[in-house]
Structures are given as structure tokens and as C-alpha cells.
View 1 (cartoon, rainbow, N blue to C red):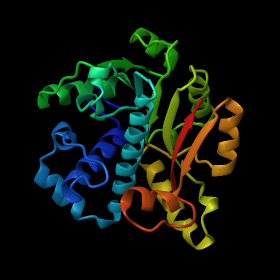
View 2 (view 1 turned 90 degrees about the vertical axis):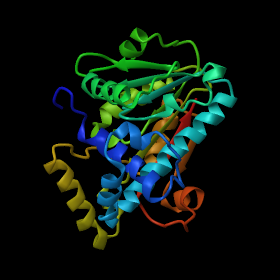
View 3 (view 1 turned 180 degrees about the vertical axis):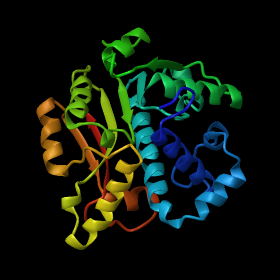
View 4 (view 1 turned 30 degrees about the vertical axis):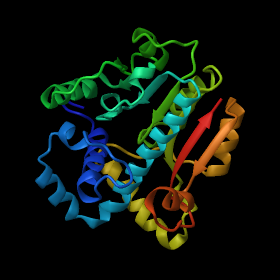
Length: 276
């Protein structure tokens, strides 16, 4: 990343969320701040997104994962959770829509300092502020997640809800499980929601060249997709860490639950919720 510039990943996810508001009227995930915070002229964004129908599937998946995270968060708040940590927050807008602010829900946004500097500029330009938001800048080459949260005033003795969307595919397996181990060590009632993809080998042979080509494109852009999981081994690994609640939504469940579409059998993107 360059100073004043976000990661390609953060910008792309924000653009998909904003385009969903314009092309599907936020049907899956309503975010009235997504377009203004992105800072991209709405007409231009809508035209460009509509011109590439191949992006619709990814756009709807990103909308579904945000909806799943915030629905799960609402249930956690009802159960007494008052800390929400957004890992790799990018241009996430929840803190500025927080319906639980009066109930004391504090939102910690964890991201690279350069991405957070870009976001602060976008927030200032859009005239947005939040009384429940705390920025926790973490450069993982120099700091741990624990260090970054401690510096931001995080309460390690209280349960917490984490969302970790669109991130783990870019990390090594070791880095993924380091963070999951941190979450599993939190007090009872803590949860995390994240998304993951299955390996190319899980797809039928005829489909593998398409998925491999997508991996090759991401690598060529400098943001390779490194880590993928098979559902059953991942669930076993989560239980071994101490997670007792595991909810895994694959393509067969995401369609009916969020998209008003029949479930699609076979491998694909997954939404995972795990709790202790």
C-alpha cells in the first residue's frame, strides 16, 4: 500500500457493497452510507458495475456476508455482548449506523494504519462521525492483535463479537489460526464470523481451470489468495481450539437464507460463525 491509499481488497469490497445499494436497492444488505463513504459518483459506479454482469455473484456474496455478520451481532448483543471488533474493517460503516450505541456497544475497527488513514479522510469528506467507534491501528509486521486492542482500551475480561470478512484468504494458515486462537481464548459468549473459500481441488474437474485462472489473476495483481479450507476439517480444527458453537453456511444455505434463490449444491464460498 502507498500512503493515503487503501489496499485493493478494501476498496473492492467497499465498491461491491456500494454497488449493491444501487443495483439491487440493498435488498440483501441495506447500507445507506456505503455510496457516500466510498466517494465514487453514484452514476459512474452504477454504470461500471452494471456493465460487468460477471461481478454480480461476488457482489451478492459480499452483501450476504455483511448481513450474516450483523444479524449474528444483533443476537450477540441481545445476549449481553457490548464489544464489537471489526478485523480488516476497510470502509465498513456499522459504527455510523450502530443501532446499539445507546445500549453501550463499543466498536473497535482494526486495520493497517495506511488503510485507516484513508478511511479517516473519507469519513471527514462525508461528514460522518460516531461516538461508539474506536480505531485500533495494527501493523501486524510490528504489533500483535492483542497489543493493538489493548492500546485502544479493549476490555479483555468481557465477551466480544468479531467480524473478519474478506481477509483470511489472503493470510497464511498459521496467521489465520493465530487469530482464531486469540478469539477462542476470550470469555464465554464471545463469537466470530468469517468467510472462507474451498480449495480448487474440491470443484469438479471441468470447473477447476476457471477457478485456477481466478487464483492466477489475483496473484498477478499482487494480492494472492493463499488459504482455503475444506468444511469438515475446518470444523474439527475449530472445536479443537475450544469453539463450541459452529454454524457453517455454504452455497446450499446462503441462497435460500439471504438471496431468495435456490441453494446451489457443491463447493463455493462459506460463511462461518463460531463461538465459545
